[in-house]
Length: 483
Image (cartoon, rainbow, N blue to C red; front, side, top):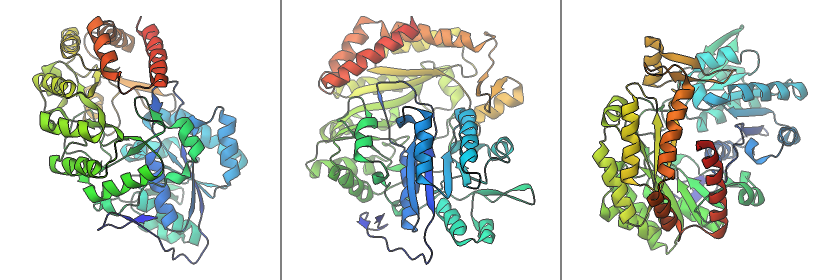
């Protein structure tokens, strides 16, 4: 099925290929982190699969996280007998991706392999150097249509067609050739809905859910890109492109028809366009569907009226990327937000009866022990439902990565050793010291009786018994780390 770009509905696809399509295996090869909070389905691969199907090819999708053993993962791949293998590469997965490719080559030395994903887009030359002799192609940028073009060319045996595929890298006469990067897809309504049937219902129920949502749960992407430019954030493409409310609601109808009761909206900022957001929420209400919804937003995008509508439409939780409780650090990051705005957003969200989660990290240049104390004070005062806090590992393609490299403060780098890079600050000599500061902030937050009580109360009506058991086990695991 594909989506009509004007009506926003699914329509049958008529395949016009004269030759039999290619068998394409799409792999998510990331570590299976032990967590009881759940995981999202690999929606980006399901998008690729939908377009491949539209062009007459036969895709399959394998998620390493859903296999108990690596041998089972490889056995499943071998059973697919693919002619083309596509692997998404992330910055922290060089090593395991290299190992996987070596193992694939042992039993299928002639299979074509293409690497895509954010790391290829951010570091095409570096990836080509690391995986030289291991893979046949690299593909940067949004790849729904370009991967289909690659599959067409391979299926037809038309090697000359490779030269015209935007974003494609391949070797000619022993030298890597990089075609021009593709332009962002403007008509995002014209991209077919993710092909969710690449995951069996049994696997979906067993592996894909988010705590606090009705199980199994789904994910939906209603826009691409971000209108902001935080200096630590990597953007696959420039510009912000939003799907129409009609397109989004049509996909939600398809999700509902599969018996799904909850979903996460995984846009960087679902609330960027107030008018569009309201149209989608009112459309959900008009369908008399009461799903459980989680979404992300910016603190300057909300107000009590919008939060009230979100609550009525089924939104249970909003996550804000607040990053720091220090105004000095926020300004250095280019966040274009204030500590006061962050406080007000948490208060409004909680008063509307929604859970409020906050993402933060420590270690941005300009961070000091004093700014870390300010972040700890901010969290104690704001009392969000929960926090997700880490330390800065600058990504390829970000302003902060390039700045740290120029200044000589970058320590380590992404690569086969998976030695996560960090930025040296004047007041600490080892990254472990920053992790210790992070542990102190987390302990102060989570061991606060008012915060524990508030979190338990706000989740009382949204968590089932199984959710509470999972949450308690996860908290126990985290407490042992923080202690």
